Structures are given as C-alpha cells and as structure tokens.
Image 1 (cartoon, rainbow, N blue to C red):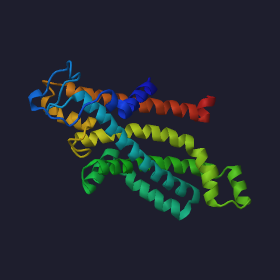
Image 2: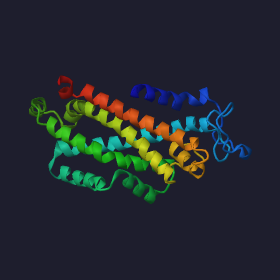
Image 3: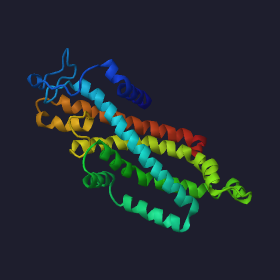
Image 4: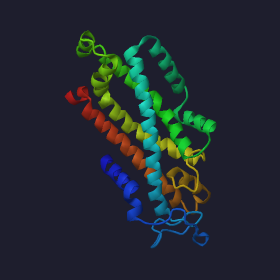
Length: 262
C-alpha cells in the first residue's frame, strides 16, 4: 500500500502537469472558493486558483525540497559518521560534540532556527531541513562504522597496507548501505512533514509557489465554510509521510540480516 501511494506521488510530481494542465498562478477573483465541480474538480482557493492544479504543482515542490534537503543532510551526516566512527579519538570527540549540539534542539525548532538566521524561501527551507537530517544519520552511521572497523576483513586490510580511504570506500561504506537506505527513506517522510510545517507557519516556501503546507495556511481563513481546501493538502501530506514510514519499515525488515533470520 505504501509503495503504491509513493509511486502515485512520484508520477503526479513528475508527470502531473502534463496530465492535468493548468496555470497554478492564474488568479480569478470572481471565482474565489468555488465548490468542487466540472472545470474545478477540487474547487478554487482564496484567489480563484484551481486547487487540483496547485496540488499537482505542490507535489513537485514538496518532492524537490524534501529530496534535495535529505540528500544534502544525509551526505553531511554520512561523512561525519564515517570520520568519527573510523578514526575515533579527537576526530570522534569534535564531530560527536557538533552532532550533540544539533541534537540538543528539537528537529522542527532547529529548522525554524536556521530559517530565522537565513530568512524564508525555498533554498533556505532546503538548507534548514538538511540541518535537521544530519544528527540522526551521523549517529547511526558512526555506530555502524565502529562495529565494522573491528571485523577481521578490515583488520586484514590494515595488515596488507590498504589506505584508510580505500578501506572506507570499498569495505566500510558498502556495508553501511542497508542502514543508509532505510534511514534516507524514513528521513524523506520527516523532511516532507517539516517542510509542510515550515510553510504552514509562513517560514518555508513562500507564496505564490504552490506547496501543500502553504495551501493549508491559506485555507485557514475559510476552514469552517470551505474545509476541503485545508483537508485535501492535509490528507496528501499524511498519506505520503505514512507511506515513506511503511516503506522504510519494510526495507529495514528486508535488509537487516537479524530481522530476516528471525
């Protein structure tokens, strides 16, 4: 079920504008808050813009922000975790303290802090969510590396004179990939939720760009009379985040040897 929802999400984000053409920025003040019907299957918003078209373009914005943010945050977290876990000593102490500082802030609060420093906008939202993604990836990668570097085949590589970079790239990192894949999948769901939360608070993606959290924020003023404009983006966010969690749990069960054997 989760995989089906995610496949639909990717198809809508990539090919949606071809399937459901329209201008997400087209304003028609005479058509404000139209109910769902022919021509506007999900109605129109506070500026007369087609809600279905904006949902489609919002999926593209959501995917772009979350994927770029998780890619940047995961890359930084993997680097910190590899370096801290493999080299240990002072390197581990310095990098672990940096990660501890990031973990001292609740995830959403950390993202809000970064946005408050850098300012609002799509690019700054991506940077904020990437900071949010670093600590968890770094700590789990570090733990995995500390376990792997004690294995016999790694010790044998040291004996035969293999360089640290070669050992990390050919023996340590490949054996961490199952953990990384699961963590990235789960992080994507968290990134979408954080991005939508920031946009709902007015700190993330800014109007008139279509984004699900921002659409919920714009629908607040008429939520009692026209609740569908807030409900539809909320359902979409819930389904996609839940699907990433389900797929992540499934991948963890499939890729973890201990769980597979049990």
